[in-house]
Length: 518
Image 1: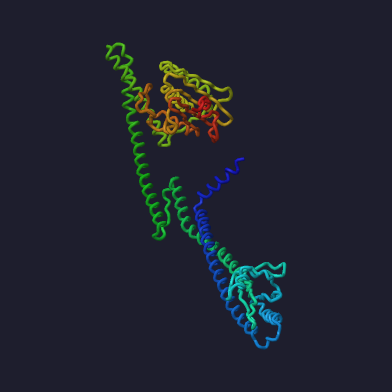
Image 2: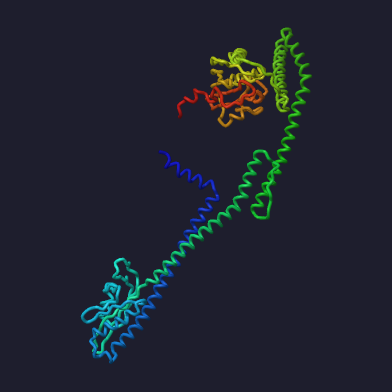
């Protein structure tokens, strides 16, 4: 049922996807129009010229024949002969010129007609004009033949009157068929048609060759741009000549050089930044350990302090713990950047791991008024993974969901199939825009910068979670909508040699799919 609608759409797509096709079809169409107009003009002018020439020739030949017949009619030798016999003899003489014209003589008793034609070939208007007036008249006609299989042909008929010695008038008509001229015009039409077809084919070939000369370099530049976009910055186009195509190739080469230079500068800057973060993190680790030991001693002895000193010791211990976690995250990020992160794989029950992490977070969730609900589907939920890293992923996801739940429920689900084990963490809090789904894993990115953190953190938790998922050859994806909450899905292959092709759980929550559209 949809085929009639799909075909025009497919043709339109083909039309707008191929520049050579558009140029070729346009050139072919314009060429055909111009050739048709030129052919029609040529044939009209030629036909008009042939018809006019035939008319002049007919008048000249008719005048000569008339003069001869008039002279014969007034010849003293025929004065004693009956007029009918004289006209009959003149008609016989005219038949000798059958290749040139046909003759119709209106005699006193009957008409004398040359063999092969019908008297009706003479128009009635011409008969009346000759009968009523003197002179020579010419008019176009359709010459009809006595042969039933012969088609009528255009022609000219010249009419006048023969005058006998007694003063009698006998109308005579000279009929000139345009048989030869018609054949000539048909041959000319065939020649024009063949010439038009040949010229159209030649123009199409020329258009194709010219288009190819323009399109081929442009396609080469397009492919080069795609390769540059994919990271092949060493690619350069050949510059030939000084035309616009050469200028395009030169501009693209300059752009590639500039991009390569800027990327190298950014890579150098990124390397320096990563090295700086790694070095600073390592250098801060030793004094931080000493400071933490001193802060722990003060925190343990806080009961012996006055209220102001006790509160200061508690705040200092909390902030030092937070700073210690930030240092640990920075060190972990530096390991990922240096490619030094490795896995310690073991067979782990993901369902049990998730339940354990949820139990560890119930105290924090209750303090924020958030209910944690866990749903583990029955079955084999084991996979080869690094339990320390996956616990950290779950800790980051649960903490993030609890912080943004705004006192609403957080649901954690675990499911598996033959290839993978998946975990989803769903909250019904503030959510985020759909276009921010990939940015939530950027380092230090926050959907709402004005929001005050409740739990605290380094801003690297989701980034580290993404790196841990990639290290397991797994997926970590996010879904969110403003005011409708968010859902994060972690998908892990059962074994390290498996390549994920799907996930047991959907990234879009089922309750949002069933949500009525507005």
